[in-house]
Image (cartoon, rainbow, N blue to C red; front, side, top):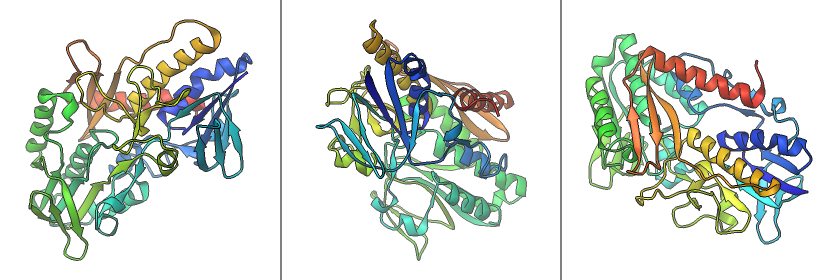
Length: 385
């Protein structure tokens, strides 16, 4: 019987485990899911905490409640990945595999931008977002800077959503006219993979809310004492509050296994998710995929889900017999625009004519659909609460 080992229980790992559960139930494979955390929550839960829609503990599900009841869940820290001997060593276990899927997400590395850890609030960390909420809730005048440290980073709309939500909070407090909001990015436009039309639409949304947008600004260092960001192009930005998307890279255990390349991530085949090592796959934020036009594939939970679903079908075909299914690059996400509205984004990265991304106007219905998106997946992976 084949041993399938999945490292990481995020969007990709949970989807893969759920879709391989019947294979395990039929006794055709042993499936093991490994994660060092006790609970799962979606990344946008942090933005909803900032917006006051929920408390920090809401939206979580314990891994002990996994609906995939024939999948073995191991809560432990991964120490080494040994692809030569097909083993994963955790603190407490040595796990053999026939198929290994790496879905560990991206490691946040604020230390790669000098001064960031001392001066900035990490937009990808709940405790930092709680501090940001307090700061935004008390500021009366000054400058709030939202900076993207480097690319790639998970959830391309995320920093723009933070800017929209902060604008909304300040308007409700009646102090928006006294507070400058500036968003800077190394990107040439918002969400470059989405194309010019979507980028222009997001720039219009930023401009309508009076949010200053500075593309092609890559930060070089941050002075924590003087509250100043210096950029590679020589520009300097003073701030009172700094929210940052920190540099991303593959987790240390993946890099030490020799699976990451110069990009800092694991190169995989776009359609099969295969790495250069036989029977080792990677998906989601840890993976580096290239689109047919040569551009980088974006990192997003909904796309990790689609990758995992394709890989599950291919693994089932390999074990039971049948035809493998290729990843198709489609998905839908929702850009939180503040004012209790969200803008749906339909994604078809592998359309014959090139990536096709459609952005609909923000609406109350869009935010409700985003809520339903979360509920449906949590119910699928953990059962109804």
